Length: 147
Image (cartoon, rainbow, N blue to C red; front, side, top):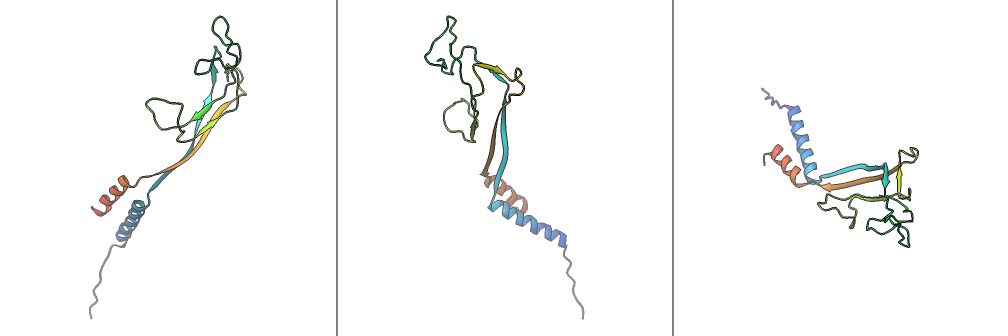
């Protein structure tokens, strides 16, 4: 009695099977996620006229010296608003990736070099995810299954 022996390359079959399973998982449930933080360190600010961004004095009533400088001191704080790229920057609208503010950190002008123990750092942690189904799915299908 003669027995036929069929030889199969098991490592090659296992590799193709694993690649097929990986491609299926990636194609059917593909998410990309990221975590991290965006940090901004303020080294100082100079607001010699004591004005708000709209040109009015910080302190009311709006009293100015002869040179146009406001008499009162501003109560300066910082706000970080992280958005998607904008061709024209706007301080209105939602902060897509989050926002953070500091308490009041100084008056009209100050420098961290003058007071090295005073650090102003705004740290905005973020986590976000988005679907990446079309591009990678098509790549894996064509690469591994010839479709």
